[in-house]
Length: 288
Length: 161
Ligand SMILES: Cc1cc2nc3c(=O)[nH]c(=O)nc-3n(C[C@H](O)[C@H](O)[C@H](O)COP(=O)(O)OP(=O)(O)OC[C@H]3O[C@@H](n4cnc5c(N)ncnc54)[C@H](O)[C@@H]3O)c2cc1C
Ligand code: FES
Ligand code: FES
Image 1 (cartoon, chains in turn red, brown):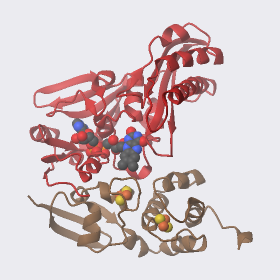
Image 2 (cartoon, rainbow over the protein chains, first blue to last red):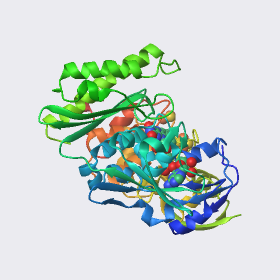
Image 3 (cartoon, rainbow over the protein chains, first blue to last red):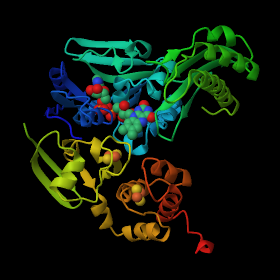
Image 4 (cartoon, rainbow over the protein chains, first blue to last red):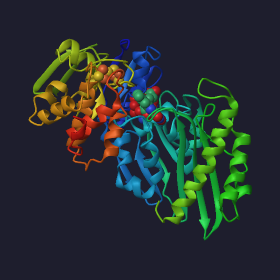
């Protein structure tokens, strides 16, 4: 198992990199998905444009309203970054569930999102938090919401000549909390089913609720009609259980080698109730 | 087209013309004879090929050799030459933390990187690190004991002996 031959390009700036990517000349980030695919010869690019020599792309900063995470920030650096831990704690919580430390030391935030694995946690978290992705090409720059970026399994809005440069994640407001919950066969494995949620409250009343499912079909799925079940209500186990019925009715029901349709429905029901409860509990302990 | 690789591997300065598709695991094993780095799966799952790149544990089967340009790489051979290795190897010996030894170099590289990270290590950290390695024979009970002993958070069960 060895990659087929390719040309290796190591630009020092984003501008140089943008001259080099396109068609079958692909960006290389941490390689934790791409090299595996190349070892298996599922991917045989003509050229790899290694982005690791562009220091600008690894920066994590606080832009006031948003936390800006460079696409090349490693997953391991991001999960321990104090800005991330304080202002977008769900991102750190989520990354700790990705693979193993030995993968996250090289795997990047941008590489994970650009790979857009349907079982991946991070795209769902970005959809939940309403993040925007910044893309650049020789033609210019554009900004696209996470929910529009992830178009299907391993399919994104990226054009072949584009590079994801950074992700802008809205900072958590004092009135918001969020959580993630997944069902996995073994620690570090991809999820069989997963949910992420964010709740906003005013005193004991719910102002806004969002729940996103992942490892279900081809891309993160936002549960519809959740606001009418939760908003304006006092949140308690009764309302969470009602919400979880709504989730179970919308969760895709298919059989595969992980679970039958019925098991899947039950997993999603249980996970969503739990994730809402966990989100709510974070208000009680005053933690994030 | 070949590319030039300059890097430090264990205590050797490397300056080589290589094919870009050469994996770090193959550079280590086939070109430099550091065969303590094992290759099990070649797609990141088993952990046998784990080495330390710039202080962090990483899969050498999912790293192109050229990605280690200007880096410092340590393999089990480099780790075994360090002064702290005695404690690690005796912990694995005393706790029976290996059987065939195929997975062991990778596990030890991860444990050493954890120790050197300066983190205050808890039992949970050991579990998270061992998570990243598959062992087909010893079993994780002994590996966890050995790893905990190696980092000094477990003294061993005297009654068991
Ligand atoms: C054993 C193992 C377990 C794993 N478990 C999980 C898991 O539980 N959850 C999970 O989410 N992931 C998991 N992963 C995948 C991991 O998160 C990868 O790190 C990630 O999917 C890819 O990131 P990378 O930086 O390595 O990107 P690469 O592999 O370098 O690139 C991935 C793809 O994105 C493209 N790309 C990369 N960066 C950019 C950019 N800036 N702009 C445009 N395109 C770009 C590349 O061309 C390629 O197509 C696992 C991987 C392994 C090996
Ligand atoms: S050989 Fe690299 S992880 Fe299995
Ligand atoms: S000791 Fe044999 S695989 Fe772990």
